[in-house]
Image (cartoon, rainbow, N blue to C red):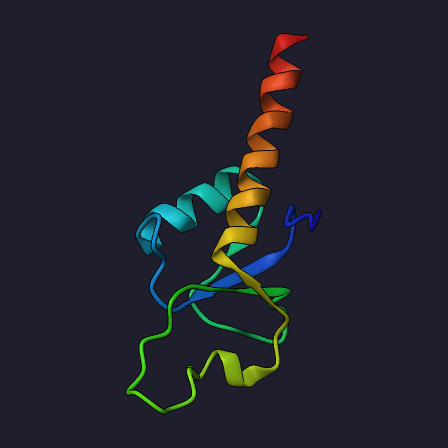
Length: 92
């Protein structure tokens, strides 16, 4: 599984499970480094739903940067795995 700890991540598209502020907070608490814009230092772009006109390519400016992408589902799987790690460490 992908480990986003210490990775700079950005979000694009509409997230279906939480709003952007919640995603930022969750990512930060779990060890990622969320940012508002894609830069040369961005490691991954988390892609939510991209709304388009019928027949158009689902593209955003952030997607055009060539930054490696992961889905919202992959981001959530990482969050779940990190929370499970924390839970195990608390159980001793």
